[in-house]
Length: 281
Ligand code: HEM
Image 1 (spheres, rainbow, N blue to C red):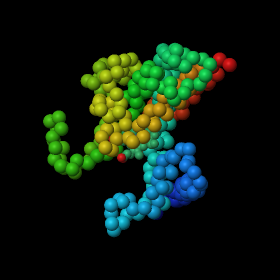
Image 2: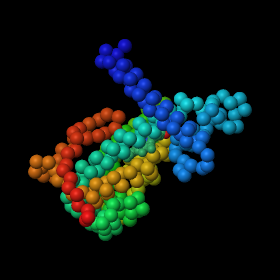
Image 3: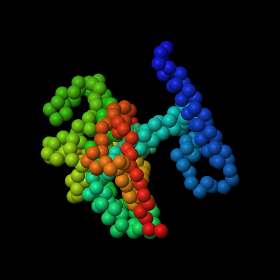
Image 4: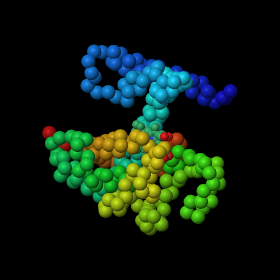
């Protein structure tokens, strides 16, 4: 029994999610019955096309069948892993940009050159926005959304870098402290300095172990590509279309950057800023 009512809240949330997932799946089943090819097949279409089929087509006993419940579980996994992570990462990056007017000006200049002032940023512009790319890396270095990644367990005794790790150990990879380690990033590790990525030698896709905000290896984040596009597109739109001012004459360096630890690592307080339109009519 949960005396704080958590059990009851969990049941209610789970019921609401179930209703939403039923609706999503039903819409996709209906859509797949329509004549002719669909213009776009999304992730749910692919899963629905496997409904009631064996998970392993070569399994003659058909031990595991893909049921609606499996699709709902995957949907829940994807929503839980994508929604808050992307939002938290964007809010941290934007907070750093507001705290560093110099960075804001450089981003506005880059957007001015690549996009101009007469239209919105489009996804096809993103590869040309190289400074924005550095800003995103630098923000994920200081504010990794999953500061300990997902826990690992060692399957056998192993020595890594001189450290003995016994079989069955629970391993937490502390990307938060790796991102702030002066031995890796020099004495200015705590500073927000996107230019440190100028030479382009370090990427964030799991190949350079000093910077792994999306983890690495076979359990690394499968949504990384989507997350990076979302981050860059939302940030560039915010900066390109709007001019921003902190509330009540607050100076950039006064912006509170306190973190709070939960499933992810969001800001402790909401970010407040006042926009005005800046694109030319
Ligand atoms: C900025 C946004 C995001 C960040 C920083 C992030 C970060 C991470 C990290 C650190 C992990 C654990 C990797 C590891 O331990 O090696 C992870 C796992 C995962 N992420 Fe993301 N993620 C983001 C967005 C997304 C999106 C948009 C999706 C889906 C569309 C997604 C789906 C997943 C899933 C399903 C897992 C679990 C993978 C597994 O356990 O095999 N993530 N993510």
